[in-house]
Amino acid sequence: MEIQENIINKVASSGLITLNLEDFYHKGERVVYDIVDNLFHGLMLREKDFRAFIKDHDWAQYQDKNVAITCSADAIVPTWAYMLLANKLQPYANEVVFGGLDTLEAVLFTKALSKVNPQDYANERVVVKGCGDIDVPVSAYVEITNLLTPVVKSIMFGEPCSTVPVYKRKD
Image (cartoon, rainbow, N blue to C red; front, side):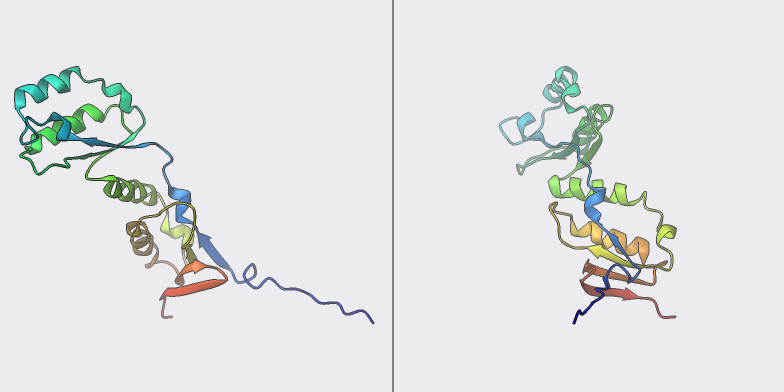
């Protein structure tokens, strides 16, 4: 007696769309530029010395890199100093932000997600993948939720076989 079983993949037939935020990861190198190296006695920035550094520094070394500008010391750093750094980095770097690597990562994801067309997900049931190989900042999950909530039927978090409901439109 032969028993034939049809195995049904309920996940595949569920109509869920899986959105993996890792797909929006910018692969470029991340660099921190710490202005502490430009401080006089580790306490303050001297304009004349800083302007000489700005003029002579090899800015091409930042070509296509993602740069976070910060100051790790509790020092007196005028705002214009960060502006000068951004101005010199801008022609070379892919992205320049004020803050640490966490800020840089959040900005990179926000920019990448701004290219998502929410209408591509209109009236769909979306699962935002929650585990992976890349550390996706929480801000990216918040951003995608903000983008999709007005147009989707539902948003879930996790994997299609095990999700946490986040949003369900009331019809």
